[in-house]
Amino acid sequence: MNYTKLLKDYNLKVTPQRIAIVDELHKHGHMNIDSLYQVLLVKFPSISLATIYKNINAMIEKVFVDEVKIEHKKSVFELSKKDHAHTICSSCGAIEDMDFSLQNLMKEVASSSSFEIEKTSLCFTGICKTCASK
Amino acid sequence: MNYTKLLKDYNLKVTPQRIAIVDELHKHGHMNIDSLYQVLLVKFPSISLATIYKNINAMIEKVFVDEVKIEHKKSVFELSKKDHAHTICSSCGAIEDMDFSLQNLMKEVASSSSFEIEKTSLCFTGICKTCASK
DNA sequence: CTGACTGCAAACGTTTTGCACGGTA
DNA sequence: TACCGTGCAAAACGTTTGCAGTCAG
Image: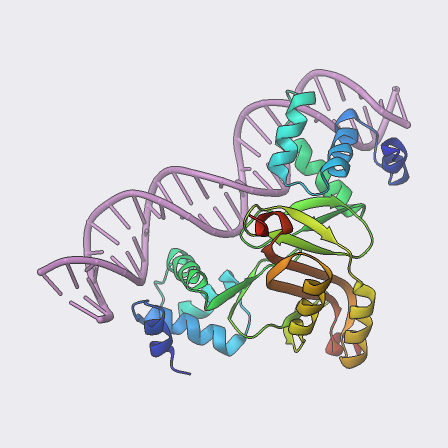
């Protein structure tokens, strides 16, 4: 993926910090502010939390980063992708994407209620494969 | 509903403040900390936010109150009830319960993945009936 | 060259904590 | 009576803001 182009497309100036943020989100899939901060400190020993907050918020506003709110945990952030659900392991904390046809779900709901859905958020909390096999 | 019995059943001492909290949650369905505080101030002019936080947290721990995390808004709290989804109107902010067979959804997911679901959270953001008709 | 971005420090709003007092069981 | 809950004030926490210096375009 070309992070420079991505940033430019969304009218954000291309800075090393921003490239790194997008890069880490892409590599890790889901990260909260703290883990992002820890990882970025390696490349940018003097990076500040304020910079990370400002950039994440800018990216959310440009709608190419999404926030995932999780019960009892801090929000994590991910590069926007097609509708999907999340699984959160209550044992190891791992967060995974799950292929899931939210489209069908949304159509079903739309036809049975008078609510016009714009966005759907679906999270499963439970035990992941790895933890279950222990 | 007998709030005294409910509190006793969960090993919480029965205090007027706690009865009022449960009562308001029951009446309003979903409330955030601030609205709860405002309403409780009427009955208890000297109630403190700390008391509300402590009690809500205790009730969440006893699993008879649930927290609903909402994008761009403060969490709301509700008395625990059977699995259901939430609709959140992005226009007027109203939060409603939606009858929804999460059971079927969960079975479907369980059979197609190796994730053992304990809890499902499903939120639809969009435009409610009332706002749509304007 | 200009406006936007960074990093620092301070401010802010929310939630938690410690403690003395009061109420429940 | 013993313990738990309340309310107050202070602390802790996460996030945002203002600003001076720096960098991307």
